[in-house]
Structures are given as C-alpha cells and as structure tokens.
Amino acid sequence: MAEARSRQFIALSDSASLFVPSWRPTHLLDYILDSSAQPNPIVRYVGAAKGDQPQRINAFFNLAERAKFRPEVLSFFELQDGNPGSFFSGADIIFIDGGSTRNLLAIFREWGAVPALKDAYEARTVIVGASAGASMMFEWCLTDSIRTAIMPWEGIGLIPGTICVHHNARQERRQALSSFLSSGGARFPAYALDDGVGLHFEDGRLKRGVSAVPDARCAVIEERRGIPYYVELLALYNA
Image (cartoon, rainbow, N blue to C red; front, side, top):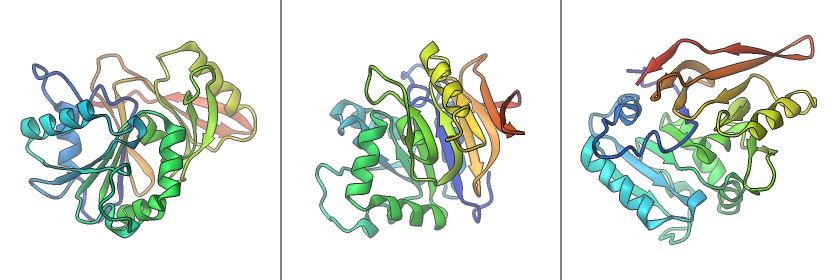
C-alpha cells in the first residue's frame, strides 16, 4: 500500500480491464482500492466522456457490490451544485472513465473542474483515469475523438509528459505517436500503453506498471540528444 502522504495517479489504457465480467476477478480494481488508505473508500465516478451512459453507471454500481467500495457519481449533465470546490470533496478515489478526450476536456474546463481536480490531487485523493480519463491528465496525449483522425491534444498537465493509450489497437496510433514525438512539440517522457496496462504514478513519477492482460506491453520513451529513445517497461506488476 502506498504512503498516504504521496500524491497518486493511476492511468489505465482502457476501462474494459476494470469493468470485467462477473465471472472474472476484479484484480485491477482491487489494486486501485489498495492504493487508498481507506478500508472502504468512497469512489466518485465521472462518466462525462461517455455522456453519462446509464449502462456504464449501472456497471459502476455493480462493481461496488463486488469489490466493496462506496460508489458516488458526479454528473456534469445533472449538477446539483455548480461550485467546483464541491465536485470532488469527500472522495477517497476519483475515477474518470473513457470516451471522447476532447469532449471530456471541454466539459472540465467549462465547469471549472480542472483546478478542483488538481486541488483534490494535492489533497492526496487518489486520481484514476481510463483511456480519455488518463489521456487528459498529461501535458499531451494522442486522441481519436474525431474518428477519422488521430491527433495530438493538449491535456491539463497533472502528470508531465505525453501518453498514447490503446497503443496496440491500431497501427495508425503507433504512427501518429511516432510522428508527434519527432515533431518537436511533444513532452517527454512519453508513454505508449497497450490495452490491459496501467501506470501508477506517485508525486508525478512513475512507480510501476501494472498488467491485467498477459503479454500486454508498455514503452517509456525518453528524449536523448533530440531523438526519441524507446525503452520497453518489462517489469509489469501482474494485477
């Protein structure tokens, strides 16, 4: 279990590895819950990137019954309180689901939720993001929010660097990341995550990689003499 005083962020390449069928164990979710100092943590779900899909929210509550955490939902589409300071207060873990990265960032910025999220992070609330929810946290990410194009998009900079989730899903993603890293506009280090992989950061630095899928890979890309240098992260902790 991580020390309570550290600021923690867990980036997941995909949310399917978390929302597993009932017949599969919730290993990755258990790992996330263990990152909190609370034995029965309050997990606040943000599904704005998917437009607050009812079936996904139901799946979140079903997970709570299986893994024994206290579920709450923050809906920007049905706000009871428009005060950004109340969006994340009282949560032990904030989970931001995947969907459209571009729309997610627009909603967060429109409602003043970016400073509120950063305040929660500084207050040692564990932040977890999957897919779009992970991508928005970095300085830069690769997104296909427009389905016909994969392009760089500026995030909120909670974590230094660049991220590319779903790296193994499409050849175009790998090509887009390689092009962006060579363009001079990317921030390093960069992370290329296969689906099934999570990255656990403490105080902005990578602590470990976590794998929920056999043979899933992650590459950490550094800049050396102006050239991207790929290092495969082999020491993935099996969730």
